[in-house]
Structure formats: C-alpha cells, structure tokens
Image (cartoon, rainbow, N blue to C red; front, side):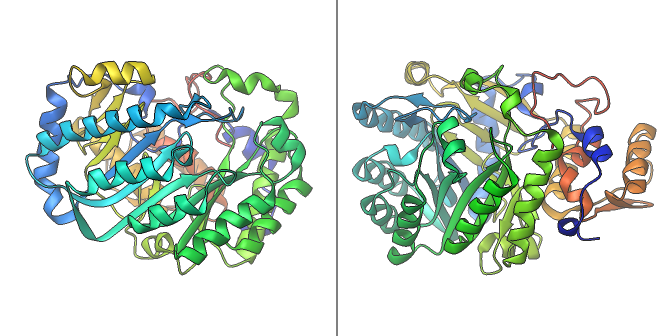
Length: 455
C-alpha cells in the first residue's frame, strides 16, 4: 500500500485527529513532576558525563531567542527586538552558563553535536557568533564525527554568517521556509521571497556546506493544495538535502500571536492531511525518503544514512544522526537531557540573567523512574525505527485492544511480541506512540489545552 497514491479515509482522520505530543521526550514537558532539585541536577549531569563523554561525546543546544519581527504562527520561545545591543550581554550569559557546566563535568567535554536554534540565530552578528562558538570550542575536544548546524532566516543570513560558521566547523544550514505563497506569508507575518531562499542556499553550497535543510509547514492559514504544490515544486528546484515538513501546531492559548487569524482561516482536518500527502508525494517522487515523523532526506545525507543503519535518534533538537546520552541546553528556555532526567531553563531573558547569579538557571526538571526509562525507549524505537519488540506480558489489555484496532485499520502490522508501522501508519505515528504513553489516556482524558492536534 503506497500512502502517496491513496486518500487516507476521513474516518481515520476524524478518529485520530486528537491532541497528542510530538514526543521529543518522554515524559513530555507538561507531565514533568518537577522532582529534580538544583543540587540533584549537577550530580545527574556529572554521572552521565562520566559514563558517556569519552566514548560518545555530548550534544549542545544553544537557544538564541531574539527576532526582529514576530512570525504569528511561531510557537517557539522568542524575544522580539530590533536592538542588537542585546547580543553581547546574552553571549556573556551563555558563556557563564557553559562555565558552570564545565565545573560540573570536571573534565574536558567531547562535543559530538552542536546546534544553534531560536529565535533567529542569524539575528546575531557573525562576530558575536564567532565569539560564542570559539569560546566554547577552546574548552572542549571534538568528536571524530562531530556535526555542527544552525537555523537561519533566509532574509538575514549573510555570506559573512555562512563563512564564519563554516570556518568554525558548521556544515549544515537550516532555513525556515514554511510556505512561499504571498497570502500565507503575509498572514503569518513572514514575507521572504523565493530569491532570498535561493541566495542563502546557493551561498551555503558555494562556501562548502554539505547539507541544507528546509523547514516547511502544512496547515497554515489560507494554505490550499495549489499553494503547497507550488511551494514544494519551487523547493525542489534547490534540492535541499533534508526537508522537515511540519504540521502547524495551532495553540493560541499558549501563543496569543496565533490569534491574528481564526480557526476558520485554517484548513479542515481532512484538507490539512491532504496538504501533507500532496507535499509528500512530490518529495518521494523527487527521490526523498521518509525517515521519520515529518522528516525527509536524500540518500547522500547523514540523516538518511543514520535511518538506514538504525542509529537515528530523537531528542529536543528533533531527529539527529547520533545518540548521545548527555544533551546540554544553554540559554533561555533551553532543555537539557541527562539520560535519567531533564531540566529546563527559565523562559525570560531577564530571569535567565538573574538566575545565573545564583547558579544554573533551571526552573523545573524531571527525574525518570525505571518504568519511564523503559517507555521512553519504546517511543524512541517507534519514532526512529518504525518498529518495536516486547516481552510477553509487558502490554496491558487496554494497549493490546488499541493495537489490535490499529492492525485492523492497516496502521501497523501486529505480531505476537512486536509491531511494524505500515506506510499508512506513518501518518499516525504520534498516535501509535501514544498507545505506550501511560501519562495520557489516548481515547478520552486528553487536555485540549496542552497538545496540538495529531493530524
């Protein structure tokens, strides 16, 4: 069954278009118990660092929250300003936080992955980005297979940005394209001509970047089949090595900027899924492989190779090529993952600065018990490999009933002690993962004000 050549039944869309997590972690943030104190978190970080740094290295995510204008669809933690004087003090605070982690490590970290996210990292000048990254690199060693990447806005990513970051070791650039239709762009307050996307992409390749990622979004206000087709066809002219084709998360109760338009302006559930299938069909026909939840890659890209050899991983940065047990998040709202627990930084710039005066700027965390560690591994296998095995008796009757229904609907192939997600089932990956999530009742008691819709 080729999902690209079929229309998903409306009955399945109606049934499974419910609020469920995106599963960049388990438990998901709304269900954290906040049971890690500031004293316990450093001990947990130190434990995982000692266990894994020498062999696998660590990952670093740096949150750069500043944007010059507000994209109304955006659900990221941002600070809107045109005052670039904020750059220097924020870099100083990031390095202060990194210095505190260096003291916890008690040894030289080996960096496996480093990613600049936002906000808009290219809001920062190339000089300030150089200061930030060079200062970190001076305190660390690089893993033999290190990978550095950054998110850039096509309107303000300059040749200087690209060259400076390339000289520091960055080889993947990610551009937020979202949609190329002018009406859609105007509605979400993100007008960026295709020529700007092309110029930023061409410049990266001339300099020597070996991977370019585009973020596309389906389900935005006023999107239609023809506009998505046109966007994907224009994107294919540039042939980025990776494409993340995300479902728009309409959560105006969390992000009031999304009230700039109403739900009447959004595609219906059935139309939204059609938009995705139209885009996916074009991508598959152009040689891209569906490697996971909303992600596509060409065969020469590292993410495709990780998918093929089953080493792909998923964390707060999304899908990654390698699995490190320690992910350090630096900056406002950044989340760290130390295998046995998570910790998130305070969410406001001023609070972040003030908290650093007292130690790590953490405001909540969660320590995983043995059952949660097991469930997290199950969800990782489903979302990264599309299959799962279990021991006899490990599933509840309720889980078996749900999985049996999914098998009958063609979403999974169910075996005595395992399952494999079908082509049709990839459209419902979040729902399949949710069967194993004991924090929620998938069928009933899901809070509409916590998660975005699955479809």
